[in-house]
Length: 241
Image 1 (cartoon, rainbow, N blue to C red):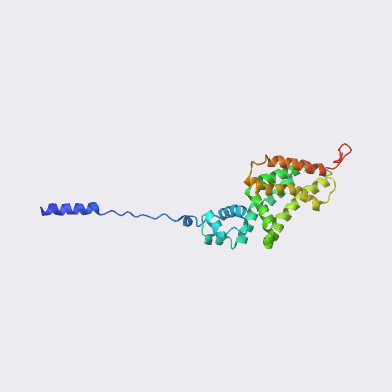
Image 2 (tube, rainbow, N blue to C red; image 1 turned 120 degrees about the vertical axis):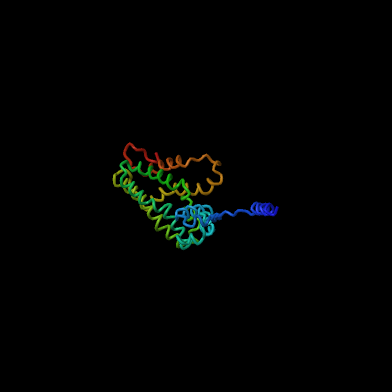
């Protein structure tokens, strides 16, 4: 009887004592992504800079959107200014070398080169989130002169040099009439600036308010611009005709 009682007691204890299995608590999301690539931070920063502007964007928000701590962000970018510069270099500046090569190898007429340049710009910059950087700079340049000088040096000047190359090619080949290149570059830039402002203002808020096709607009602007640029022959009607 005593053995039975001992057995019963032993079974009861064994029944109610839980068996503990070794478990590893899940790592917090930020710990799992502690080694996030700089590209993820740049992508998050670009999105926030375009959405909120430079002044209103906080590095804490960038880190949170990328899924890392602020400390991890500072391992790659020591300040918000350096983060912004890296975003511009990654999104825009890095394409200039590629475009230089494409223009150097282009075999068609300069009119076709100009049209090709517009479409290439739209596909790679204008239609993307990166075009919002231009609107940001136009809005906030006066408050951040150092960033403005950086943007002038690394984006505006190289971009204008590319346009000058296209226009000078047309003049040299006798396809374009002689013009003042210092100001003609702005005529080429104007449609681009309009599209970037439209995309990140009215186009973003009320996209269906006006039936507007960016690529059709580019073709129309290129035709108008070329009508003024092309060298005249006796058979070519003048603009005032």
